[in-house]
Length: 168
Image (cartoon, rainbow, N blue to C red):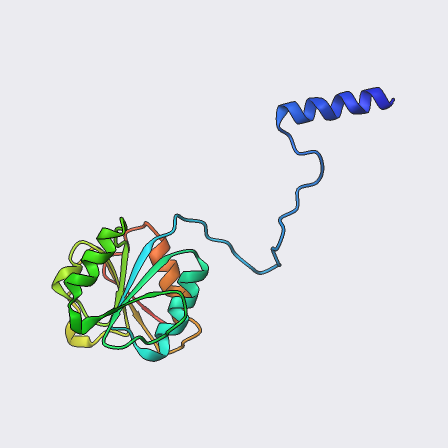
């Protein structure tokens, strides 16, 4: 009997089947996991109250975060800070020199350099919205608990959600 047991276990091992029950470590009921390749995210002149939570959730998802602002809105949270007064071009050149490609921009207003990138406008100025851009997502609301997660979900999706406005 022991021989049959060991032979069966060896056959399972060679076939690549798990030896015992498979358990997903660290998963609690009611949690979800979104897997995607880490991205480079640029926060351009973010609101001070939303910058910290947005940086935290993208850092937890192993994303590279660059903040372009006049002052660092969330020091010590894992984002690279670039002074906006020194010029956006210098910050983008440094990002490119590191071998990174900007995947998503989170901002309050559109700028010419953002053309062709995935743009998430978080609480945008109404005058700064240009309808019809296929890479533009509008998120409107002031709940700091929901904004970072929505930003992460919108950055992670590859679906075309052209010109969509989401209120939270």
